Amino acid sequence: MTHDRQFDVAVVGAGLVGAAVAAALARDGSTVALLEAQAPPTLDPAADLDLRVSALSGASERLLRGLGAWDSVAADRRSPYRSMVVWDAAGAGEVRFDAADLGEPDLGHIVENRALQHALWQAARAAGATPYAPVAVAALDLPDPEAPGTDPPAMLTLADGRRLAARLVIAADGADSKLRALAGFAIEGAAYDQHAVVAHLRPTEAHQATAWQRFQADGPLALLPLADGRCSIVWTTTPDHAAALLALDPVAFGAAVSAAADHRLGALTLESGRARFPLRRQHAVHYVAPRIALIGDAAHVVHPLAGQGVNLGFLDAAALVEVLATAKAKGDDPGERAVLRAYERWRHGENEATLQAMDGLGRLFGNPSPAMAFARNLGLGLFDRSGPLKRAVMRRAMGLAGDLPSLARGG
Ligand SMILES: Cc1cc2nc3c(=O)[nH]c(=O)nc-3n(C[C@H](O)[C@H](O)[C@H](O)COP(=O)(O)OP(=O)(O)OC[C@H]3O[C@@H](n4cnc5c(N)ncnc54)[C@H](O)[C@@H]3O)c2cc1C
Image 1 (cartoon, protein in one colour):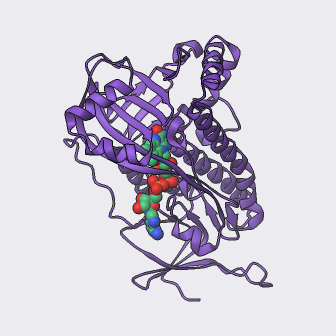
Image 2 (tube, helix red, strand yellow):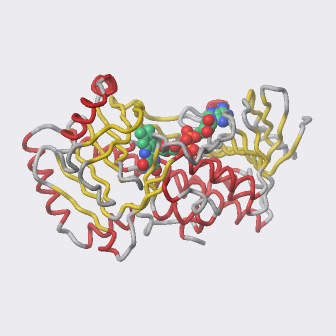
Image 3 (cartoon, rainbow, N blue to C red):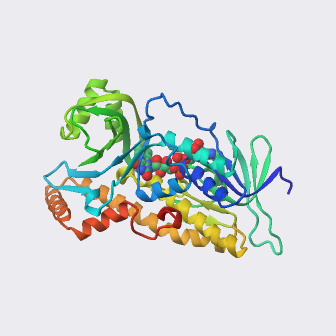
């Protein structure tokens, strides 16, 4: 089959996860094409913070530092949080996590997605990845794995007729991945009957570099500390309530958030636009087939209540990079099923465990029965005083424990 260019790896989707894996693979010496449906991201340093921000773990920070993308995000677009307070609307139970308990400087950072995506694009380009943006992928041809004696690459046909050959295609094109559909991967999951409302508000009380999260029957409200003193909220609620919140005038919206936050931070004033996102749970049954691997939201979509989605995606990226480096050292073909299965075995179970934990937490806090509320609040109090158990949970959430790939350990 003829082609215009040949690469070791073609990454489709240059969101946070796709741009990160492209940067890492190019840095390791692979030839990498980075294909994105949107125009390359731009960043106006004078523009207000975008509505989309992510809570990133220490493991994600280490990976981003390794790629040279962390310091490119301006200090006013990332802010550390040193504590987290979680409480139940239906009782007095409360858990407080402090980085100081583990001798760490912070629990993680709240980072603007747009600034980080811009930094990762720059890192990918600096490492030598070839960007194609904006482009549309029209077709994917994967070689027949059973064909004897041949070793053809995968072929991507773009809408403008260009054809790119690659020994491995990485689908990082998000929750509605076209590549995943073209390759015929099955997915499991369903929509949560919930939407997440996001906005930035200014509290009258200082946020104390603390992430605040109040669990309510319809879903949690999170208030994440921003560098300029505002809080970025993620309010998960029913679709009807989310629509009603967006229709409120700014003063009434601020009052609604202040009340839902138990007035913990005083009164909150809306100082941004507002948006809402429908939420779903989704997991690909398999992540790999000969010459293709799924990563990030193309592989799994997790409830945002513990802010894990992009952190899991970065760990996928780091694990895949490590598996491919090992294969390269041995002279193995990066698109071989046996090579890619090592990545799938590493990440599928870990991601499924997080998906299930988020479901469990949602059900636990969504149960309105008084008996359940009593047990829950008792449990929260016990957990808060549980010392070793609490520290173990913190270490895992902060990316200090678990089967971490070398890039996420700072290697
Ligand atoms: C309200 C909310 C809050 C969240 N908060 C957090 C948080 O605090 N912490 C956290 O870790 N996670 C959080 N998440 C999850 C996180 O946003 C996602 O997990 C993350 O953005 C996934 O990144 P990705 O690169 O895999 O996919 P995406 O961000 O979806 O990127 C996919 C990219 O592929 C491109 N693309 C799509 N189709 C094609 C195509 N056919 N060809 C080429 N390119 C294509 C898109 O334009 C896009 O650039 C949150 C999610 C929501 C909804």
